[in-house]
Image (cartoon, rainbow, N blue to C red; front, side, top):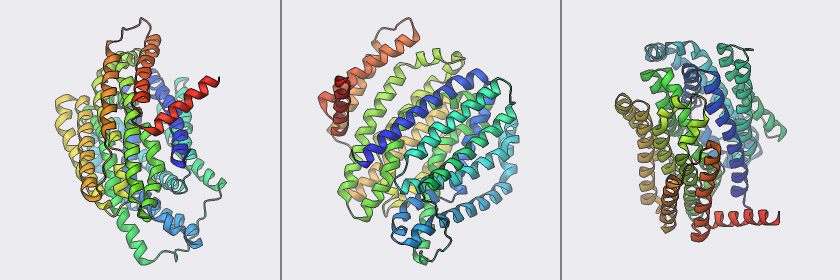
Length: 495
């Protein structure tokens, strides 16, 4: 098994272990232990911090991945590059903090009408932002070393276990809500300490501050790339997070608590994309350095069909079980109002998976400016869509705006890559999978309902999955997944 396949499989397993923990936290513990306003506060706190991170770190995450292979060719580069990036990262945060302080009155005024209680937690937002700046830069460094497994364990498993622990402490009244918010900050601090410890264990942290390895030209290229990466990463996070912030500001913390809870149900379908993209990014960078466009084209096609198969199955499994999910959740009747949020967000994320690693290819190419500028344009469109649709359709409008922005973004990238590089990810196999997904979805809807929620989830999911995988084995749209399924079947036969 190649390095992409091996690390992607392990990372996907970790992502889904983390997803189970996330489901327990967000769909059971939070609704059981807290009211909607408190849930909305915790989500807005974290989403707002995540939204500010790319600005605070000046787009250095992708710069580290792009320029590290060249810097690592020399001993000074290996020792000094991380120190250089961290110096810029901390400097970027200091600059961001000054700008935030300048605009803080306007930020506070946005929340005062519908979410005045949130304003008191602005200092915690800023602290989480700083911790995430350091954490993300160190994770990008680990990613450059092709060491992504531990980083995903820290973020998706360890972090969520700690959150669950503090939720129980809150429920049993060992801590109050304000202390719980401080505990969330402590969880981010623990993440940062964990990735530092991991890199120290690997003996990969060398904070040399001799920057003579980098020429003025290389430094200029790095900073220009960082600037465009800042625009791009900020745009992507605006598309993904601004709806939560705008729901809080326009509709209040209660509805954001509902929105962000059901939103999480939908985004589980994209976890395989995160695993594949994390390990593909440095490989695409190296392929461009070696001028191997055929390898990039192959990665593009493989990522598209494999993500469509896995993400599509997860989406239809989710859609046909929505009533069961709400029946399982505490206060499920309340959260059922977000059913169409799940469907709209799911469609947008599935389209994003179908598009493959288009962003990664553009970002690592000489055309990286296009992706960054396009993200900035679509971030503005996402805000405009939300301003139009939230007053008309409430939280459903926020989901619709988010989905439309993501679909338009991927259409633009598809056209650009075809015009510039003459590569595209689709084939007749794509049509086969789409037809198979549509048939499986129809089967899931017409299958008779069982009296028990758990029995119905088990039977309905099994029928849909077996039908779908039988179709995949028969039509063979993806040789990689076909071989993987056969290997899994052989393991079960031996047992």
